[in-house]
Length: 115
Ligand SMILES: [Cu+2]
Image (cartoon, rainbow, N blue to C red; front, side, top):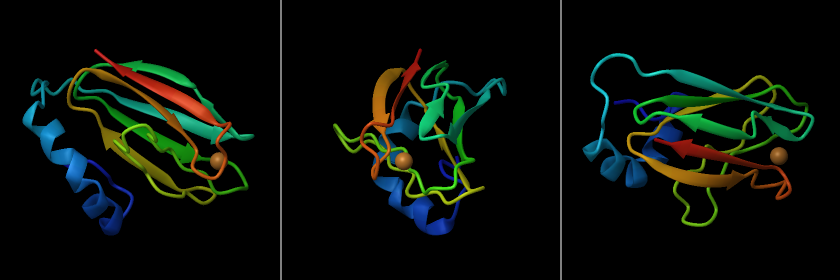
């Protein structure tokens, strides 16, 4: 399972949290959905996303500034800084809920709820 598609270094950085999630990988039915969160004007859209276990979320930075998506409470994920036009993807294997923020811009916030 590829958790991150942005670049190899990011994929390695994701391993520490990827393994427990992978153990609970729920949907082998091929119906996983890829959701897109657009980063623009210093905001995540949609800011609050509801997905199913096994779905993938791709953040796309359409802003002029660099942004990230970082689950800061437990450091569950951090996609790293995305420059203009860059994207990063994460697959969420099991139910849960995450609040995340942009690392350099703490007022940029979003959430992902996985059922
Ligand atoms: Cu930002």
